[in-house]
Length: 93
Length: 129
Length: 86
Image 1: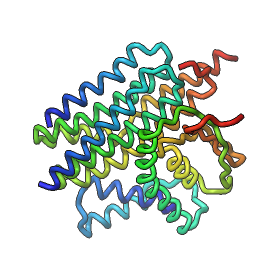
Image 2 (image 1 turned 180 degrees about the vertical axis):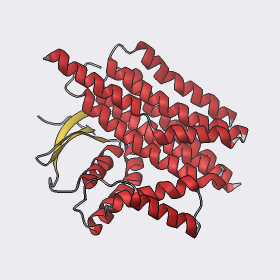
Image 3 (image 1 turned 30 degrees about the vertical axis):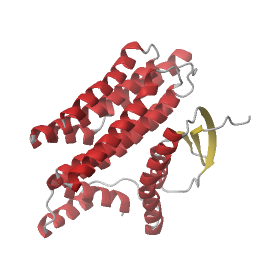
């Protein structure tokens, strides 16, 4: 029961981060500014949701941990590559 | 032997096969030793461990920074230069970049071979030029 | 669980809207990166809801191989801009 509750809390927190971090995408700020918020939503929010899923089905933990690690790794590298490639652009959103 | 590469390969093998038996462990060690290796890292085991420790500590720090960003808006941007030892092993520099970019307030824009990162930062107050 | 999925679908609408509306190419790239991650996580949640780990494996594979195509596209865009500026 407590695990179920904890899992729901994790997923809700992740969804809140998703919503909060995705919202600036429709604004008119520079891509780099949006990238900071996407790192909150897509990396941290998704990790929170994955931990929620992990608490729900602990028997599949090896694959879920692998996905958790590769999620953090790939999203961070993508953020770095996008930041590196989009710089030097005029920054009018 | 490059410790990080070895640990990463073995970890991926173990998580993929989800079998922690002795035979499977031996196969994993053999495979990760036999796969082709890149340039030799010049870093010591202690350097690897301290950098990995920083990476692990970056996870709670990232969540704290995210909550800070939610509670107090950070509407201004700044670009700062951060010095880094240019003689560090490439793997360690990769981990440094990962640690900085993983935390939501900072993103590495550019790594200069002469020894500094260009870091893009979200700040609360307008930086004085 | 279904409520979570509905909320996720609604949130997924935001980057879709940004990708459709954004006239700036890097905004579009960011929106697509966001869609990729969110869709993979949604696949995982669907698999938990239907209690079918086969679907979950697909989500895990998508997360593990990452979105290399977007990185490649970013490099090409940067290279194109460099060539255009010459």
